[in-house]
Image (cartoon, rainbow, N blue to C red; front, side, top):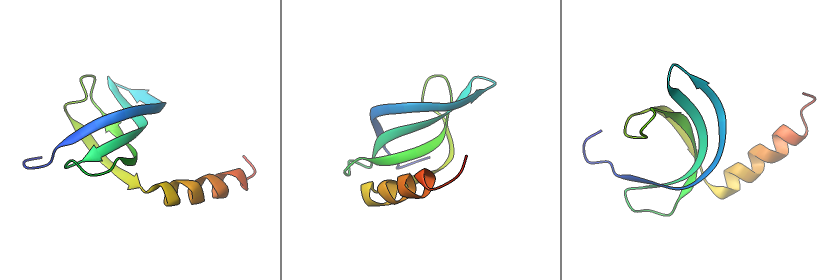
Length: 72
């Protein structure tokens, strides 16, 4: 991923693990911008990553409301 920088500012939680890769919820700063909630897969060293989704705090709050209303 040439030209893209990232800094995992806070590790919020581990969602799953498979073959040395972990799916995590983290607060990540991309290209020195304000950190956002980020869900994606990472290798053991957090140098390689899979595709993921980045959410603003407002989107994360809305997702929490949706999940709280689900009958799981």
